Each structure stands twice: as structure tokens, then as C-alpha cells.
Amino acid sequence: MSGPLEQSAEEIARTQAKTVVNGVVAQKLPGVNAAPVTDCIIDNAELSEIYTIAKGAVVGVTDETVSTVMGVAQRPETVRCIAQNGASLL
Image (cartoon, rainbow, N blue to C red; front, side, top):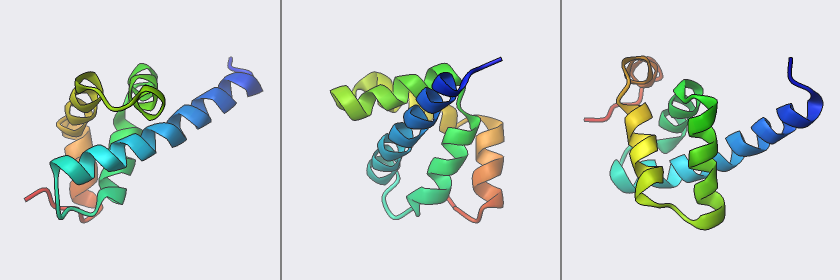
């Protein structure tokens, strides 16, 4: 069971990760509305991946950050989420 402090850390990490993912999506998929894509990536990322992505907000976006974001983006569940939210990658 997680306490309030852990929940707060997770919420902060998710907020930071969303900012990073928005930037990566905008760079890698120009012309795509980043918001729904970002939400799908965040929702389908594991907590460890959220922390890896969020680290990019502090130390800068690295190849590992981009690789993590794009890896989550290519998962079947994430692709389905993006399709259901009306965001097209094509």
C-alpha cells in the first residue's frame, strides 16, 4: 500500500513526464496533436518508465528518454488508445 508521499512523488513524476513526452511527440511526429498521444503514452507506461521519462525534465532529454517514449508509443495498447482518441500517426 502506498502512502501520500509516494502518491505525490508519482503525481509529480507523471506531470514532468507529460511535459517531456509532449516535446518528444512534437519533435518525432510533427503535425500530430501531441496531447492525446501523450496521455496514451503516459497511461500505458510502467512506473519505472514514467520515472525514466520524467528524469528528462531535470537533466534534459537523452536518447534513453526518446527510446523509452517511442517504445511505449509502439505498444499495441498505446496504439489502440491513440486510435480511439482520434489521433492519427499517419
